[in-house]
Length: 403
Image (tube, rainbow, N blue to C red):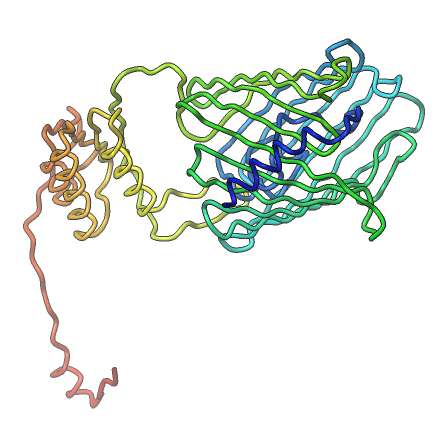
């Protein structure tokens, strides 16, 4: 029902009267982005709290141009963990050039909530025109398929005469089919007053096949957007058009490079053989850090191996064992996964690196083939257990233990 309602709102948005809205001079036009559902470097301009949910590095580079000429915009952004920086230059905005430098941070408060702050140094052409803008946002993702966001932009209302106005809004995003479909509904208004009406918009991000993304959007003013992205690995190239349906002269086109998590490719390379590297002690729970990427957890590693087993495009996999996976229970868990993979017709192999011991070798021999680095050591140690009985010694000194 949620999916039907969102699609209905997106379709109905095209029936409202059209209106030509100039792009904001201090930030780029993003291609049908949902406030609550998008991650990546470009969200520092739309919802900086999203940075807290994306530990992977990402990048954005775009050129935005009106179809009939006029102001054009170059924008670029880089993200590393919760931190992001971005720059924008608009040629001819409000009959003058405009440079904007933005930095943002998104911090997670627990597993499901993140807050964000962005500051923009706005440098329009002209004497003593520099000023700062402030954005704040918060995101809540109570489930993998649901996201909610609140965003306030240009809180200090620094330059209404230059088209830099306050904006308050929020959005909700649904992922009814995991990462294949993202549906969003957003609302924005210029002031927090009961007599001020805002604008509803709807967006959709669809992945019909691996490596191909289709984006669609529409709002009450008649603004419509559509575009596609093609991915090779983690890098994608996109082309997006945005503008009122009744006035083609106001349409804008955006070409951009974008990165995404994972490995996506619109052209299939045949059956794949992923490698899983066991090179550190996998913690049971993630250990967040402001500057460092969180270490992969044991549960996440198991989920990746399970996904490879169930993926028909995967021919097999390799366990690259630099060190033992941990306890004997973890060794048995890996052996069970290898047995499951072999029952699915997957070819499995193990590569032993550095100094392999009992646990590493017991893990490796569950696979079809075992390879050892020529300079590595294979060190087997007999298993034993010793128990120390201290009661007699404690009685001699008059100590009675209490457990």
